[in-house]
Image (cartoon, rainbow, N blue to C red):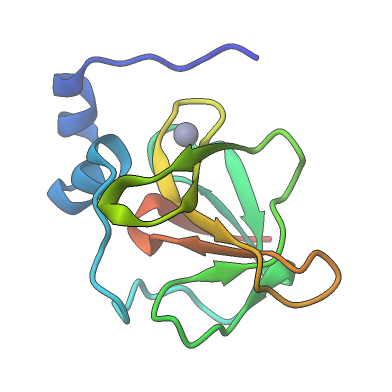
Length: 129
Ligand SMILES: [Zn+2]
């Protein structure tokens, strides 16, 4: 897979301050932010590189305050990495195409995967199907 590589300055220019902090600095947005995602069939793409990451079909309400999905839109969409920062044992999820930090994946999601991708909404762009 061809990686998308940009300088810090280029990302900063393209992204909002919050999107930059989250995707390039692994920050976490505040919970329960309203990103204006409609409750309609659609795709969620990487705010940095436009790669397709999640599908509205796998979106569910986890009450965590962050957009949650039980699966990715294809098996190469995201890369998982062990993350023990903040004294927690978590698995970080990033965009496979541009290494944007997206959020974390937890093993407490619904069937059929049992996974909960807990994603910063600011890292995603919604597009209608
Ligand atoms: Zn990306």
